Image 1 (tube, rainbow, N blue to C red):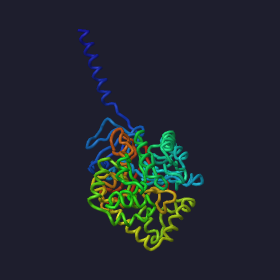
Image 2 (image 1 turned 90 degrees about the vertical axis):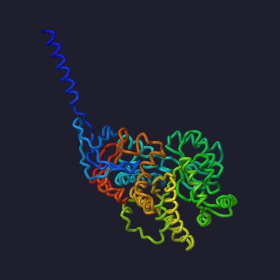
Image 3 (image 1 turned 45 degrees about the vertical axis):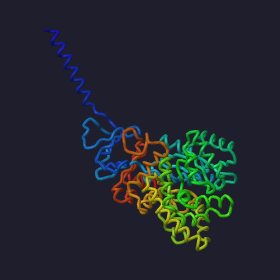
Image 4 (image 1 turned 135 degrees about the horizontal axis):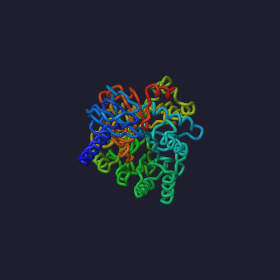
Length: 468
């Protein structure tokens, strides 16, 4: 009998221990509770809670009360709209050593605008960018995650300082070796001096190494050959327009023979846009999973430099004098342009809006990128990404697809879906909370309540201090 009671006592003790273990609270760093969580995959919105620990999303729950979880910081997100931190998929850090600090100041502008990731599409400050990138990853500096191409690849006598100049296959291999040694996150190819042959060979060589490529396209080659070579993203719409023209081959030959120049080709390509050719081009882009970066906002800004007074722009005060100085080149070109050139540019701006919408309607993946940075007049880091999404919606693209073109498609393009793109367990806790629904009005992306970067919380007050 004594042994029976002993066994019973042990059994009861075991049950008590199990019960205590079950009731043990799980502690998280931060809890965002009761917010409207936006699913960028399908546009659905659900009220839920997001638990964050060690800079990542630990779990996301919907319509349930978790009695066994606690958090050091609890944020009441009731009435707020929660989505992944924004991505600006085309920025530049450049301008030489004298503008290093001026470029560094851009990092705060991105965070203040809820932009937690940027894709640096080539510049001449790679050493500094790599330092910033490391410091941000280690939480030693406030700024967005940086994915960078490092120096651009171009031909001899390249337009942009710091470019890697290639004349033959050996040069191409050397250039790719140097980019991998940095290491960069993708390869950016520019079209100012590179030959059509070397351009295509650079894409093929990068493809063999498993590298991601994006770039401008020399007009001495065709869009079809560029896609077939393996390009992963096309920057700007000039090159897409060329591939939609019934006269692309004729125009290409004229450019190869130096009978016309880049800007001479624009009205010809625009006037020979062909719906059936365009349809085939869109299908080719879609089949090969090529992303397109429309950069509508900067296109519109530059097209109307002759009309719009930017002296009272709210963001002009955040630009260092050295950055503002770099704006003069484009401003002077606009002032000295002929009436025909000015009119052509404005017509092209209107055409590109329609082209961006048609790409979207045909299932081609778009990337929202501002092209902000030195030399790009009045296209300000931070706010210009919001203006780009706004321009997409003004063109007829849905707010959901404009939002997807930022974080969701940005992560897909750079093959970073395991860490970014949607709000789910295991993802990096780069999150923005908005006061109003961006699916109803895309301008609501600017009405930011809070930003989380690697789980670190930036309130509206914190963001305003960054701006100050």
